[in-house]
Image (cartoon, rainbow, N blue to C red; front, side, top):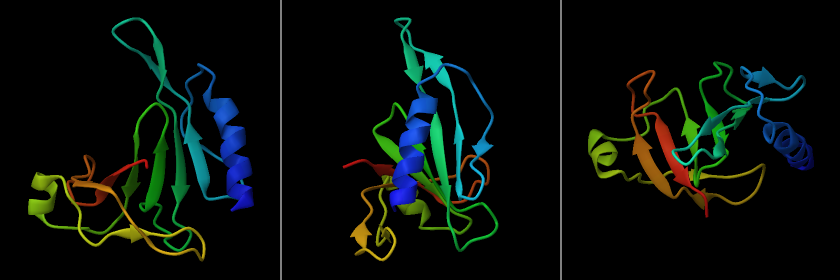
Length: 129
């Protein structure tokens, strides 16, 4: 966990810049990042960079957590279907939880959505809280 915090702090400094890069993998880790920004309607630059953490026990690379700068939510993407079409329509999720390392399981507060690339119910938008 300490290694992840150090990486996240280092990336925070990188992500504050305005240069746009493609996804960049950090060697020896399951972490990658993308630096980007957009200009809002009032001409202010908004940081839209992302940090990606791949699941350590799932080699396909299709299960990962995306921390989204400039947003109040993050996203979990997985290669399996997570819920029902009703849950997507209602914007709810049932029975999903997470844990960090060997910590306690905590319920995930957010909504199930369709993954734009796969069309599967395999993406969760999780509110930060």
